Amino acid sequence: MQNPRLVATDLDGTALRSDGTVSPRTAAAFSLVENAGATLVFVTGRPPRWMHTVAGAVRHRGLAICANGALVYDLHTERIVESHLIDPEVLEEVVRRLREKVPDLAFSVEYEGGFAHESDFRLGGWDSRAVAGLRVGTTTLTSRPCAKLLALHPRMDPDILQAAVRGLVGDLVTPTHSSGRALIEMSAYGVTKASALAHLATTRDIGPHEVIAFGDMPNDLPMLRWAGTSYAVANAHPEVLALVDHVTATNNDDGVAEVLEKLYGA
Image (cartoon, rainbow, N blue to C red; front, side, top):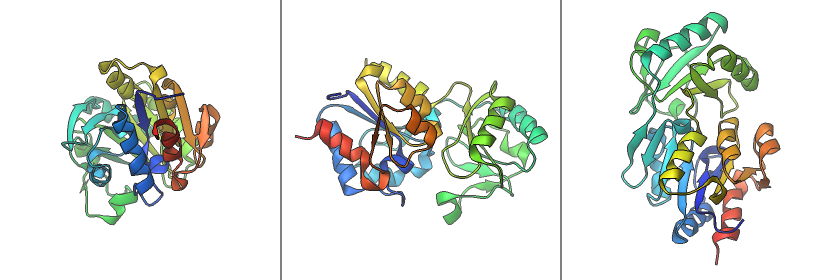
């Protein structure tokens, strides 16, 4: 495939190093994409509040689809420009069903600005190293629209938990997961990385056959299925490796940059 008009890439575990940084090589490869006139889109499970460092590293280039498709974020202005939220009534019903059938779950939510969590929700990643988020009760947690509902189990296998959640509430929300923890991320029904990316591509008159996408975890699967050309990094989840057209080097070996250099390099 030569000169795709749109490059879509996941961040954590894919384009970013394991320490969460953008390597100089990868930043330079992103510049090649935009200098060639193609559209660069970061498609991530991250909320916008985790995007400031990435925005700076790529010199505020491009757009980001955040929260697995629920929010579109302009990296130039660092503002949300589009949102697809879960209504409070749906949140209440989802939490009720899951609490009834899956003991020991703890919940948190990502709002358009900030997040909140129950007292027994064990924070991970950046949130565990920062004073962030409000500890609230379940009633308060589900009282306003949110971009993403998260459910954490202390012991279950992530793939088994996702299957259980899909069976219980898949008619109300879209569940997926993107970490090694038993942490299920739920977006509004039908909202995925693919749905948001497809809409964005349509506004630019770009078809799936003109898109190349990179990913590593189950939350990337809809996007990788939709894109005309799909790549996994070598460290990807087995389901992702089984689906994609091609496999590149690991995230720590700049696998995404390796492909982009071949496509857009001089």
